[in-house]
Length: 484
Image (cartoon, rainbow, N blue to C red):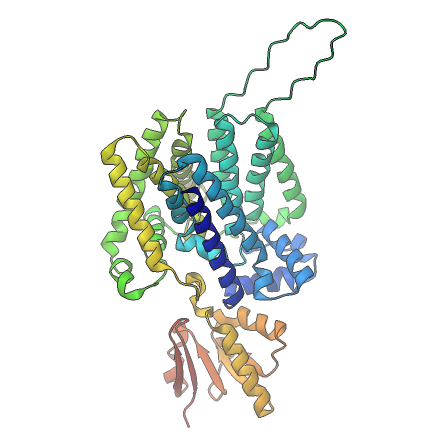
């Protein structure tokens, strides 16, 4: 089972590499490129936007300065995070489930979630932060299991800090994970002094791990993050706007990104994707019930299986913390990527319940785990990111328009929806595409050569007396031209 888990991890990483190489750049990736990569180096330290995931931005700057700018080089740091995350899953699966079928199941449930797979590829900091978080989780479990080397806590503390440095939405789960570990772990007592004979030289005992090892390593990374960040600009209100307005909508969104993130094999997945009562049952019933049951069972087994309690408590604690922040500060609740850690924590609890000695619980949890794995298999696709589906074919469209303009000897004047602008800018710059010009909706007018319209701008077809020349099914874009 350990070998099967490793093979699955390799296959998932191969899928991530393929997608990073083949998929078109997206709105947010291109926007980040424009703000922090194509701009002077000082922009990293003097400019802040919610798209600025500090450590990830620095790494993208490094990868593109070495290997040039392309979709793939922008995504290299995310791929590094994918490699670390999947490797960590193989270690966790071996540590927690050994020769059980739950070992490969853990790699699938935590690694093949459609939302997680998207952010193992997209040039954003969420996947990298998730990788550091679970790497720290694994290291802390090793300490709870008897690993008393100081370097284990040093690496755990550094990984917790790097998780926050990669994406600030991990502040809450990192704080909860560290607090839970420190409350559960009892540092080893120093060995009693022994009387030794004179003239006998004895090798000094190796220093044992202490709580301060974790805290010092974490603090060191936080200090580094302070000097890497435009701290003053990060404190301005209104910057952290992505999220859901209510807890109910946040839970519904989690269910949707779990059961209906991608269309995948449409004929098989449609009954699930379109089943709103099923999604609500999962988000409002199954999901919280598993976490609460995991917290109870985890407390009972906190010495033998601490991962159940820790995963359940971090997830529940994060929901509680963000609820308090919402009431006090108006902070939105998580939505898709800002709560990317929630499903993997849930999956870890579910797998812990599936390993229970209680037969009924083991069967119920195992059945749910199998159903979720089947759902992920049905949702598998490698053509687009759900969040930026409209950019699925932007590269091909930019190349076509450029070739058309070069062929006719003058730039093609193109009206484009605003959502497409960052990616179009990226391809104009990186491909040297000077065969077309574009106008955004506020400057769009009748009589342009071509129009690329997302759904919000479909009414322009009638307003400008256009005819649709092509309907692109994946990005749901209409290409139109003036009627003759």
